[in-house]
Amino acid sequence: MNSMTKFKPSARRARVAAIVGGLMLGIGLAAGFSTLPVASATEAPATTEPAVSHFTVFAEEGRFAAWPANGGMWAWGDDILVCFNEAAHRDGGGHTYDGSTSRNMLARSTDGGETWTIEDAYKQGITAQAMNNMLGDKAVPPQPLTKPIDFTHPDFALLFQRMSNNRGPAHFYVTSDRGQSWQGAFHFPDLDPAGITNRTDYIVDGKHAMTAFLSIGHGRTGVARTTDGGQNWELVSYIGPDFTRSPGYSLMPSTVRLSPQRILTVIRHREKNRVWLTSYRSDDDAKTWTRLDDPSSDNMNTPPALVRLADGRLAMVYVFRRNGDGGSSVCARISSDEGQSWSDELVLRGDDGANWDVGYPRAVQRADGKLVITYYWNHSLNKDKPRYRYIAATIWDPGHE
Image 1 (tube, rainbow, N blue to C red):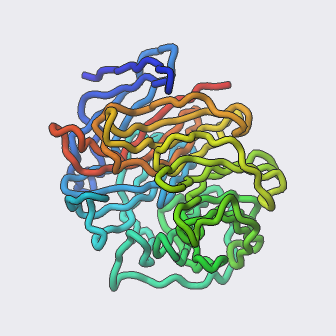
Image 2: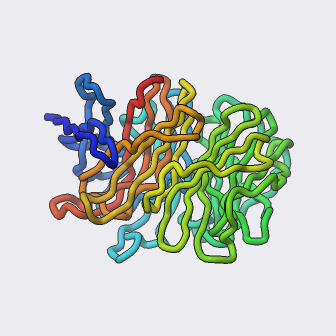
């Protein structure tokens, strides 16, 4: 039997209706994965507040799964693909995994994020060594790209990877069949002396034109552009402060185009002992940037996931990482003025026993307007539930303007 829990808004944040109960849908049964007993979901009855449903993407006893934001997430209608990392679980004070066993995996949904199957990224063509894709002797080194890519192919996607958090270098893969197979890895140039440590964040501008938003070293955000299908890239601009030679960082952008000249990006920003979200807007197609009011100034320690909704509003998703006060929570805010201001915080998932080792969300919008959000999650503060990290999905209806 399913149950619905409804949270009342507080002065600090508004909580939305959440549905939990039962056993989470099994994942990857055809591939032989065993699943953890975690929550399932069905649609809620109509309420005055939006409803959310939670699903399992990947969970396996004795395994660690994490960091969709370090991979990527793409949607073609209700066909959705997400790249994440999977490894052997290892108890410890930090991330609970054996890094030497970490590898990329792909999860695919063909029903808008409600059920998922797991695919081996190496067999699909993700074959280069990278941070948390430890392939050893099986690894195939990146090569130069020698012919232009058609970025406008209807089944196109691009995946960035990095060799390390601090110096890179970076490389990339492309697909024209919705990630069934990938071409690459291809070299991405070191456009800054601090090195390129890209995650996947790009805007397709034309058949052979793309703007990519870079993490530089472990401290800065930049913009690069290609007009010849990825064979050559030029540095266009930097966004925000430079922490590549000082403590702190400003990186892991999530970006949307608002018009032919206007672009908005939200960035994970750290100074001293605080990590929050900053935002910048360009009105000249990424040449210069203006800092806006912070979308959220709480010390949350998370990268953002920014989506431009079909009705023109913006949805920003992030995970508030904490050990106390009910544990971590999956949160969202809405902007109706292109990021100039943001709604109160909505808690899409919380009081679930998740410790700080969670988050790194990605989000896409389905054809019916609902958002599908993927992230990694756990129930480590609840002694009655398994402690392993797993990939979860939340489906949320942000309503309409």
